[in-house]
Length: 501
Image (cartoon, rainbow, N blue to C red; front, side):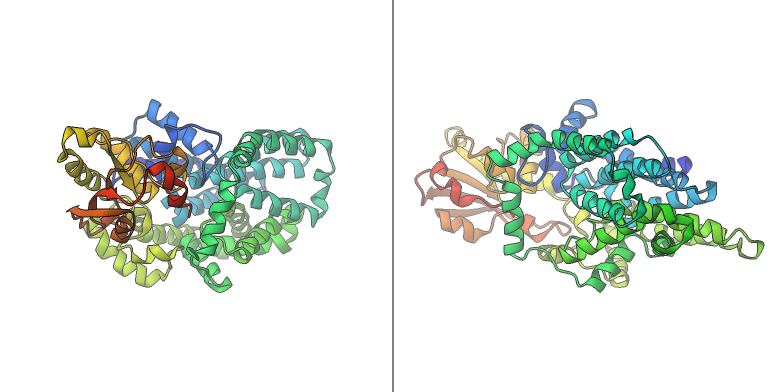
């Protein structure tokens, strides 16, 4: 399993510098310049990791993707290790690790600097200690679970759904005995103590995350999948051939004597999937839980194919999983030049039939992880040409406004190279950072609808046009130079321009 993890790391590092920065990555690097105990759309850990990356590795595309590559390979190793803790031999450990290595969602996350790539480590780290306690380990391991859960909450709030599903699974089985121990409550208190700073930040800022979630639902931004559509997406995105392992693995966890003492893990998997269906969670929200069923399914296959007449399956299944992963690899990792990838994607997308998880993403020419990774520097350079065409006096009072956090992050990241000031925006945490003392008398608008410009300015001039064939259409909006505002000052209208969704 270690060899498989090293292979995954090597693939990610070999392609880490391809294409460009993902929009979220640019935003997280901007957050790293404003370290705080919370942000509108995420807890603080990702900004801390971005700060460390900036100071230890740099901010190039390659540097930003090093830590995700390490996290992705660690997930592969951890999946194999869970199989070992469940009693699996070397074949089962290797097969479980192979499933994690070949899962499309995991491959894609390993190339993106986002909170998602770290989630499996926190979730499965907790499960590893739970397995050991069920097997007779020291109950003091609840402190490790509490530590991982607390830090996991500082990474992404969705670990709370996993914790609730896991506790429900324990309560439904005789393994509830490990909850009836004071060390469990020590772990709960430790997790809560770690989470308190972010909790207080949310209280002091009037719960911005809940406002964000409310706005997303109210504006119906997400595509709501039917239960069957959700399950189909799970099968496709985790690699259809790994379903040969995780579907039987789920069944065996729930019903076989082999896993009777670990039945709670099967229920945790089922409860989490049910929660995601009922709450209309995005298709990748449940991805961190799959190592459990990869491990169980690999053990089940190992047990069932030990007889001589079935041993051929032990060679065929790993080959099939690997071949299917190779076929879908360009959709997850940028191994193809972007022009060649476009031709590949048209064929793959028709076969896979996977819908984007947000309505606006339907308009993107490429999958979101690629489309939102191109054109940023060209956009910034175009804004800089407009900015530098102004007189020195006018430049001092000209703000650069970006309509979304990705474009704002691009201005912040590339702008210094072109002489641009930091961006302002009403989107996500940029709104909390305010108008940066600008009055709004002259503004350059990036990625902003022209109708919005006319709403706030009497004089609107298109100064640059963008036409990147691979970028999202909203990032290809023209660069606008705006004068003669219809407002008194940016400060006066700042509450109005808040855009949390």
